[in-house]
Image 1 (cartoon, one colour):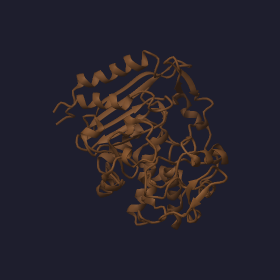
Image 2 (tube, helix red, strand yellow):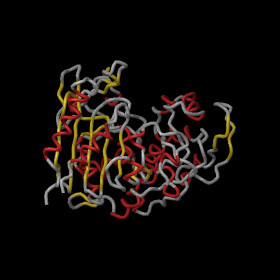
Image 3 (cartoon, helix red, strand yellow):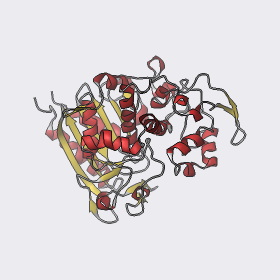
Image 4 (cartoon, one colour):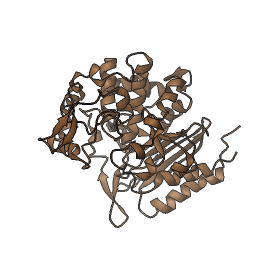
Amino acid sequence: MGTGLSSERLKKIDLHFQEKYIDTGKLSGAQILVARRGEIAHFSALGKMDIENDKPTTEDTTYRIYSMTKALTSVALMMLYEEGKFQLNDPVHKYLPEWESTEVWVSGEYPDFKTRPQDRPMTIRDLLSHQSGLTYGSNDLNSVDRGYQQIGWEAMNKMPLPEWSKFIAKMPLLFSPGTAWHYSVATDLCGYLVQVISGQPFDEFLSERIFEPLGMVDTSFTVTDDKLDRFAACYAPTSDGGMKLQDSPLSSAYRKKPVWVSGGGGLVSTTMDYYRFLQMLANNGKSEDRRYLSRKTIELMTANHLPDGRSVFDQAIYPPWNDQLFEGQGWGLGFAIALEHGKTQIAGSPGQYSWAGVASTEFWIDPTEEIVVIFMTQLMPSGTYPIKRELQVLVNAAIDD
């Protein structure tokens, strides 16, 4: 049967990103992988992974995948769900008692917050679907964000998971769980739940249950000395349309083992490692002779869990920051879920699931077309350029059956 993708049209993907972004100095380099029906149809390495040291992008370049970590954490937690270790509607405080007395913000600024009790307890489903009421301290959207910053967001990110959870549970929620959608540290809390429910350190669970059996040899929370030469530099845009170095491989925080093991954004990986993970999901939870999740669990994870079939835009308490990631999307248990064609404004498939990382990395799985796509680069922040929208148009244009 083959892939049913036009090789001539796939070549246009590289040409587009080379001419529009790399040759013009907007991106240092990129890797693009397109697979269909379990077969890689296109895999390219463009530009440089490190401009300062004149290193070209190679097939085994290692990238900071940031929030693409969330998919792995969500899968890890759902493995425990399949073992009967918890139910999705279990209150979080059943496993993490510090969350039982957390209240909801009403008004005021830290430390003079006015709060009220939650309408109902936060559940594990709320965490996985970003309906928990948690937020990110890296933003300045509201009083709770600012409170995170004032109590020491950077300091919190250097705490062990048990201490971090207790610390953040003292802050109020932005809204009562289940009443709105807001992207947050919820998946980091999912990582801690994996640790508590399994009785195994979170990073060890990932390695033993996902990375090692899938052959994800370059996926880790740390870049070791023997892999430093493959670790890409990360850049940030400048006002003149160029780039500046944002994180050097040599001095990067990823060079040291983290104290706070972030299930929401702490991993580095390669395109091929991440492809092994995504293809397992595309195969309904199976890779070679090993099953990681059942087909029914993946169907549950990739259904829209927002109330009444709403989109993220309908349910978000604040307008999402990146239209190309959220337009026409619902939210599942760890993934954005495409709704209908007219809402996404892209010729994709309803039910496609995806996510991205803050350094402009992207992935999606289209179950209808049996397509898996990964885009790797290193530019902070994501949404600087319409990479996903352009890439999706080009990939879908290559379908030739």
